[in-house]
Amino acid sequence: FPNREFLLADFNYIQENNITADLVICFDVLIHQPTLEEYKLGVETIKKSFNKVALISAFDNWKTKGTVYFYESVVKSFDDCNVEVLTNFDIQTLIKITKK
Image (cartoon, rainbow, N blue to C red; front, side):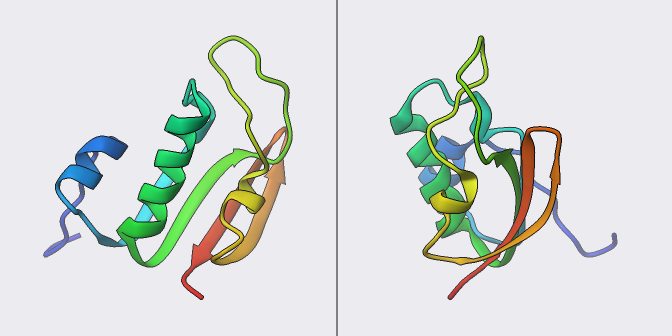
């Protein structure tokens, strides 16, 4: 894509540098946050960093196991945004969020 910039970054880098983007994609990242605080940091970072749309895949329900963690439904985590469930596959949910 000419004239487009792509950035791969973690939640801390995005927050520290106040980065925003028209499209934010976060697949299978929230499920690997080992503490509730880190999960909430990830959710808040996504909410602050997207201008138009964010696509997120995470769990809607699950039991914490190994290096995979569950704190609450991904749909509930973003309930202050417009949430559209795009698909449910196996144990994960893919959602699209936009600002209210």
